[in-house]
Image (cartoon, rainbow, N blue to C red; front, side, top):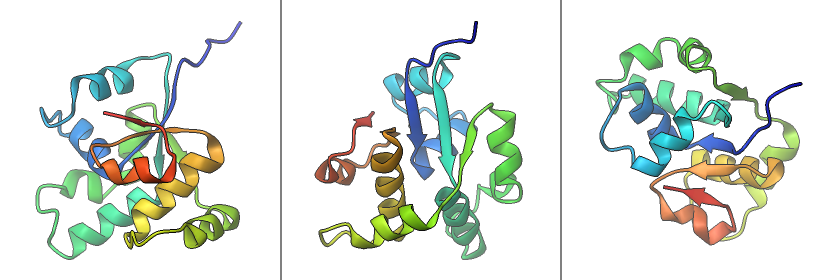
Length: 134
C-alpha cells in the first residue's frame, strides 16, 4: 500500500532557496511541512526561471549552486517539478488585481489549478484565495 499524502504544497521561490540554504529565515511551520516525508512538495518551473534570471542579473549572488542546476536541486530533495502548461499560463494572465510579478502570478495560478498550499512569507497570495503556509 502506498503512503498517503498529508499535504500537497508548492514552494515559493524564496522558500525553496531558503530550504536549500538551510536558512533560519524559513519559518518553523514551513520547515516542518517541507521536511515531512508524507508531504508532496513541488517547485514550479516559474521558480527555476526566476532563480536563473535573478542570478544572471546579479540579484542572487549566493544562489549559484541552485541556479546552475535547479532541476538537480529539486530532485536531490525529493521534490516534484511542476511544469507550466497553457491553461496555467492563461489563468495567470487573467488573474485580477494590480500584482505585476509574473512569477508570483504563475505560482498563484498553479496553486489554484492544482489545489496546492503555497509555502511563502508573501501575504499577496492571500488576496487570491490561495491557501498559504508560513
